[in-house]
Length: 177
Image (cartoon, rainbow, N blue to C red):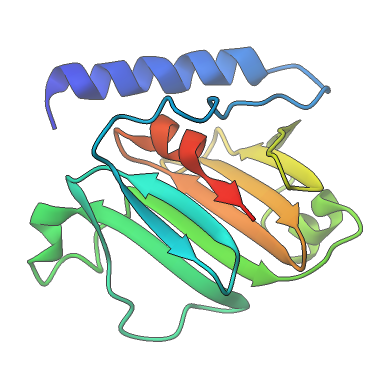
């Protein structure tokens, strides 16, 4: 990753944070379809009904054990260079999608009951086509990752943890179906 690409991603995430801050109306931080760079690959899961695009610099971290806790499914994206080392599982993923089997009446209540909404966290409603509800959860006291997106759709809750340089584009590409 180049310094320029990192700074561009940081500016995008900062602008997104400023645009969403302080609003109680659902924001759509996700870009319209078609804005994803050409040549990206698509990860699609027909069982849990989601898809996300990712750059050719990334690969999927193989899951050696079952996902932790109540996570029904998890996919983690990591730099391909790290995937070939024994440290791929130890480094924070550049982008993570976790799926929970749940149909919450209110997403914020589900987050609280699953210890995913600490008292100091701030929430902002976000919109995603096909989702009943979406929340962005920010934990400013926590070191990265400290920005999380949750969407309730169908019988699932999707938890997205963006961390890498391509996070804003990967968020923009995330879809439920």
